[in-house]
Length: 115
Image 1: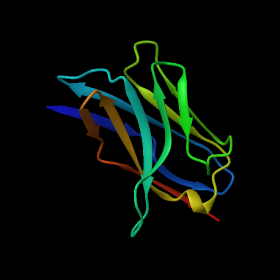
Image 2: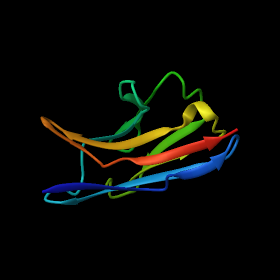
Image 3: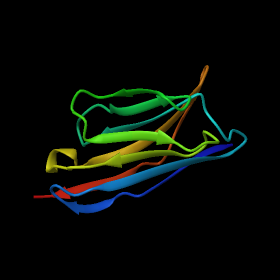
């Protein structure tokens, strides 16, 4: 059993910031690549950011320098710093962990940005 425990979502005003975190637990404590995806009703889940190791990062085009993904030294917990949020960033944010063919998802955390 593997769980990805997400935290940090909530309600914030436009221009505000949030920090999401995700920590694996169970039989896998660390993944090669971890990432954050987001989804709104009726749309496909899209990549927000991913990190492989501690330094190789990839961001969705819409991020435009506003978000930063990082991992702790043990490469267990992944963080997503969300800055300069807009109402268009409102979505459920999902943590993802991948190692080879293994692919796990968290339950999701709601981020709501008010105008």
